[in-house]
Image 1 (spheres, rainbow, N blue to C red):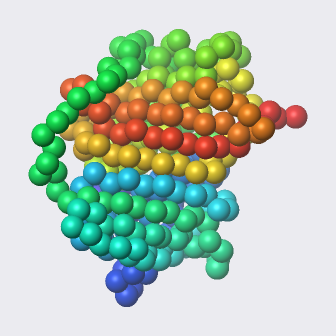
Image 2 (cartoon, rainbow, N blue to C red):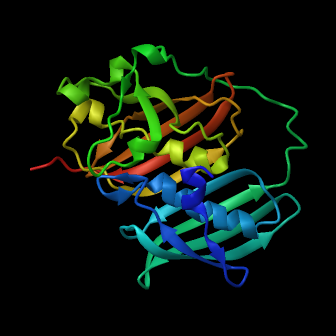
Length: 263
């Protein structure tokens, strides 16, 4: 079993309550990655939902999660002909850490129009990209290969640019195939776009993350682009896209985060 699958598994207790452990193998600055936490909750939701296709998730990060025991409580909001809508809470030590909404649709039997108003991002060949190193406290990068386009990687050497953008490639180090859970992880595995213009000393904790999954990729490598256009009142937005190597859109995302420069 791949490490990611081991760290998603939770035990169902009564059909709506799931218990397990949050792993330390997917951490950023010693905190469990937000995309990994979304994947844990989404996996519990999928076991409750009657429908399984093209999910949309919105997670509110109420308080900081930590590695260790956790519970996920899933409630069905409503079932319709086309959609299953659910709400879930991730709880640790009696405190709610994440509140998440999920919408699953019926299988893709009406996808008769596929029109993209944008092309996959231009990203340098992987052989020319800059690998994000696995530093202490950043265990995520021991398991995910994240390669940044050199045009976006100057912040790693204190060479800042005006545009807040990260472009690059991502894949599992152990070559695990992708599914909806890995897409949630990948969306939140790139460094925050704002680091390109503000530097690597910025503190950027996620407040809310929405991910709309359009296709399950078949290629091992995904290419991503993440952009921040607005920094106001200590908040930033980040809009993201993930594409597979065949040019199919995999997911779009919108993240709202706090931003503070380090002292």
